[in-house]
Amino acid sequence: MPATSAGMTIVACLVFSVAAAAQQDYPREVQEHLDHARKECIEQGGGKVEFGADVVRKLDLTGGGNDYIVDLHETECAGAPAAYCGTGGCDFAIVVGRKNGSYVTVFDQRVRGYEILPGKPPRTIRFLLHGSYCGGHGNPSCPKAHRITERPFEFKQPQ
Image 1 (cartoon, helix red, strand yellow):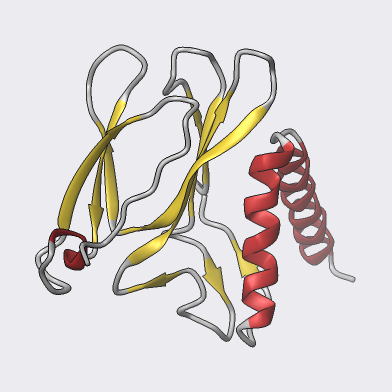
Image 2 (cartoon, one colour):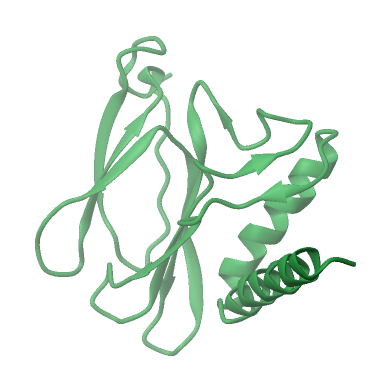
C-alpha cells in the first residue's frame, strides 16, 4: 500500500474514532435520537447515515446546565433522501438535564428552523413550522415560540 494511502487510512480511522468517542459521551437520551435516525434510514430503504457537523448541540437552555439540541437538518441517509426532512421541516429534538442528574426529551417534532432568543435561562426558542400549524398551507412558515423547561411540549395543528 503506498504511504499516502496508508496515511489516509490512518487519518480516516482517527476521524471515525473521534466521532464515535464523542457520541459515546452523550447522555443515553441523546444517543437514542441518533440511534433512531440510523434505524429510520434503514427502514426507509437507505444505507449509510452521515450526520452533519452540528447534529448535536450542547448548551444551557433551562438554567440547569447540560441541555442538548439534536437537529437532523444536515444529516443524510444514503438512498433515502427524505428520511429526516420533508415539507414540514427536519427531525429536531430537545433533551434537557434535570436537577436530579437525569435527562428528558421535552420536544421531538419536525421544524423548518429555529432561533434561540436572547436572555437568561430558561431560554425561549422561536420555531419555524409548516404553515398548517397556523391554519394555513405549507408557505409561509408558521412561527411559534416556547420557553424551554423540564416540561415536555409539542405544537399541534388547528383542527
